[in-house]
Length: 400
Ligand code: HEM
Image (tube, rainbow, N blue to C red):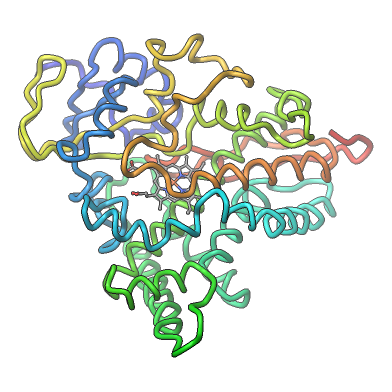
């Protein structure tokens, strides 16, 4: 197909502001070939939704990333498995991340948010990125995994550095590969220490314990600990950070007021959270690979074509949403694809929503009003879109 080359997901332009590019993709090239990366791009809501539902045609088993990041997490990452094994391994963790179970984590998340805020408001300025929106999801997922407090600082630094993906780079650095291997060794030890708890003893009540039980029950292999545990860390870290970061940024710039975010119960409303996810979702896209020839928009895709499913473009599609480029906090966001669709639908959705609701509500309640003190910086990632740093100054004389 011959057309003007204007979209590359790894380009600085896409990193800076991908939305005008998405509009052009949807309107002019709903199936676009990005030659530098050798990938196709689907950008309309109906196409992305249909493609994600049809896992038999659009498989995840050959990895959901591009370049050398493909299958970076390794064996066991359910995001990169097809049924039936996908469903079996997902079951190992499913109960822990169900809505009912996740509610039990609410007080832990609240206490953690309160402690972080108490610390950061001691100074007149703070970086609400590293000191809050990053720390809260990381501390939460590490506690759910079962990482002991003494190791959390090390695991947090290693995880963040491992996941950093500078714009224009299509492969992990040697440093990222080294950190990945250190984290994997550590997590394999954690799981192994929880296996076969002995007659009459329960498995440890944490996600490492669930994985140990899954291995002992023959649902997954020891060699799959790496992919599953790394996926939980990655999925649990930057995504929720980015969602919360967008909300913090909107408060700091006055784009939204606390009154607009908070529902009748004094907590950030579910519709506001959905709308932030729709408007500028943390996961911009993930890929699939075709297992049979497919015809789309008059183009025949051969077997083995890598296709980016652009969640973020789908969520701005005017064919699906009225006034898609406006942040409308009471919008019915039920159809947005920020958490994906189909069998790979985000396992952590209840947790992400809980963290955003409790985290931002607690910030509004406990911190003085704040405004941006310097320009924020974004994650150097081509998949995840969100703020890494959000420097603010507090106005000690007024609450939000
Ligand atoms: C706002 C925050 C989050 C967003 C926007 C998000 C987004 C997504 C998306 C789009 C997918 C689908 C991937 C695909 O189709 O290939 C996904 C899958 C997944 N997410 Fe999340 N996620 C978030 C938070 C979390 C959290 C906190 C966890 C922690 C447990 C998590 C765990 C997972 C897992 C394990 C999968 C793979 C599910 C499967 O393949 O069956 N996510 N997420």
